[in-house]
Amino acid sequence: MANQPVDQPLDYLVIGAGPAGLQLGHFLAEARRAYLILEAGPAPGTFFRTYPRHRTLISNNKKHTGTADPELNLRMDWNSLLSDDPELLFTRYSDRYFPPADEMVRYLADFAERRGLDIAYGTRAVEVAKDPEGRFQVTDDRGGVHVAERLVVATGFGRPNVPPIPGIETAELYGDHSTDPRDYVDKRVLVLGKGNSAFETAENLIETAAVIHVAGPHSVKLAWRTHFVGHLRAVNNNFLDTYQLKSQNAILDGEVRRIERRPGGGYLATVAFARADEVTKDIPYDHVIVCTGFALDASIFTPRCRPATTINGRFPALTAAYESVDVPGMYFAGTLTQSRDFKHGTSGFIHGFRYGTRALHRVLESRYHGAAWPGAALSADPAELAAAVLARVNRSSGLWQQFGVLADMIVLDHAGGARYLEEVPADLDEPVATAVPGRPRGHFTITLDYGPDHDKVDPFDITVTRIRQSDPARAHEGHYLHPIVRHHVDGAVVAVHHVTENLENEWTSEDVHVEPLRAFFARQAAAAAV
Image (cartoon, rainbow, N blue to C red; front, side):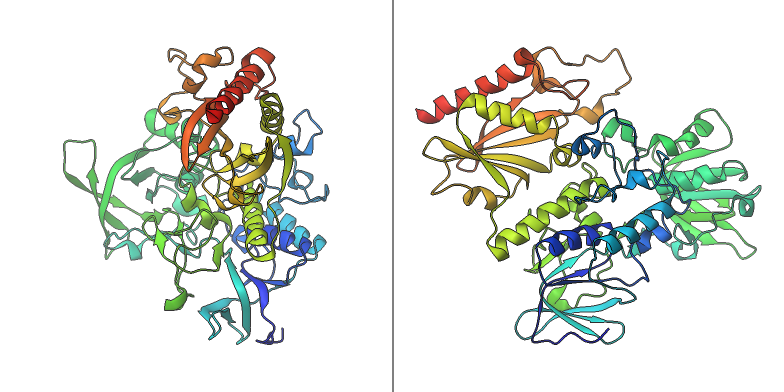
């Protein structure tokens, strides 16, 4: 590929042709912006050529939903990227609920080709700097120089997240340990980490290893309880049975203080237990496998362009607009944006960040190209507002998947009108300020979210009092996903309304859902008029 002339800067340079890079490329191409995606690998989706190591995705691929509504179907489809092409749905690529990872590789390649995305393959970004004009200047591993007004980093994680344990450099990493169970026959194995990669690894060895210990300083968190899909999923938790039913395996709650590689082979790990009388114990193992996640690789950024990080340096620190907090014009897309909803929402996964990427594109269009945030005009009539809100929450896949992160907004003007904005980052003020002529007369945010302390309630314990379906006056006590409407005036939340949760997620009851919401809007309108 020839070097780009530096006097013709791109509007956008995107690093990474994984799902997020492709999703953003799709929107940039539709908007006819000058962009280029740099991809180190020979094809899209390099990550999925290696991960997950055991080659089965745990992202739902539910084909049969009982509805032909494409928006509702995206609530159950965790793998498809957003486009207007019905052939580019992942549900057409596999019938399996948990599909093979190789199908994701094939899907991403087809998406890039069918959308005609501008991608430079085999082109690894090795340095991110700024030129004298303040534009981003990215050098690739072949000496090519790419100049752009804005940079979007969609690389995903570039390095393993390895905890600072003395001797851990002698252990095996999740990314390169052997996945052949025959290599562990009658062996003692220590797996570091308590997430899905750790339990996926342990699960693979149950039939051959003599003893498997899964260790970490924090409690095991189950996704069905926390509603965070990155926590331990049921498909990976068979190992818990082998521990609690006394089958030689165990979960060690505590810190691994030291790992020593023994001269004759194997390891000695020093474990400090969190819930045992002994302070520490030295335990022998034949294998130690590190499954402690991944982190941002910041090695390509020069000092002037090095973004601040957060969460132990694993993620870039971002504004509500997905922009680096300290490098203006540097944006992030994809799993790296999960610092915004870490271990709460879905920004780390395709079914979440596809909507975050669409919101990012709308931010870029608004900031740099004068495009208004997509929306529709309404009157401020309470009945019309209630109908608009319930129509959206009954169907929207974006609010459903990015619960508590993306919000619809109703911005009121001073002439009895309003504008309804879709899927705005919940704490982003820019679209509100420009939605209506003059200064807005307050606004409402509409999110789908879980109730307070929902992760502290065992969803299968029938002795726990739960509010469901029938009591609008106690809707705020509900634990399950439900619509929450907040009234904002001069930067402060002045009132909150919870729409009663519903087993089928159909908020259509005139008495239970519609009328209480209409009355809320009427009360807030009356209060604002005083």
